[in-house]
Length: 165
Length: 165
Image (tube, rainbow over all chains, first blue to last red):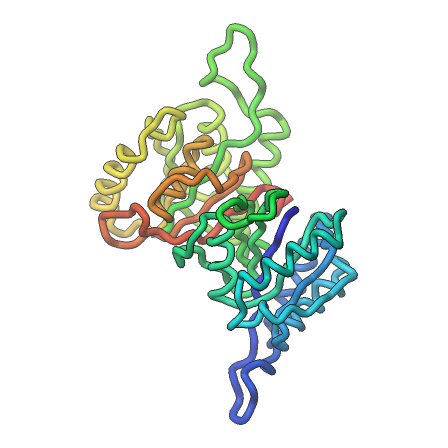
């Protein structure tokens, strides 16, 4: 399976009295995210599921992926929030593969530094903090069929949004 | 400085009696490479130097970068050939930075598995064989100002040509 990791688009600064998790995408953030999603759709990508962090800026990003025709399924996953744990997501993924044996491609929408650290753990087995994922940037991994993914995935893409704008 | 690593485009199969180093880009290889170079030019990238492996398929790829307006300087570097050594290129690079103190961006054109292994060593300090660089694909690294680059660079891009086609 291919696992894509996408960082949410540019979000508004935190306003006084506003909860951090409610920050919304800016107009520019929406436009850039739509451009990235549109280019992926032109390339013919389809995702069996879009899995999003529960935070508003991630859900808005995920919604743009659906509106662009990249997937028909959106699911919220609590461990994609900034304090989420990779080991919990891996449990979810094991179960997902069992219940969706024909699934080929999944995209997770979340936050930094989590996504690039998760990618480093899945590909290289540890965190190096050497991968730089821009807002609306995309990482693509090739996962093996085995249950243990840690240090076993291949890094296929690290694409900043600028490549598509 | 930013260091880009680009794999040569699709080349012809080895013909009987032909030397391996003389394999040329195919028509499709030229078209894909021109597309990648054209997109990078549209994005506004400029390279102080294009440094190419001496093999024909790499020189042809490097020439396309020049013809696309990405650089005005092409230099051949023997250690970008398939049997080249990173430590020798690092010596070249130290000297290059001393003699080109205003240089900001360099692109190396070469071969696999060398380029993705060099990227892994420069970013993570060792070879994992987990980065997959397609023909005409591009890796971008952010190098520190210090002389020692090994394990000190950041991975900014891993972009397959399909992202631009």
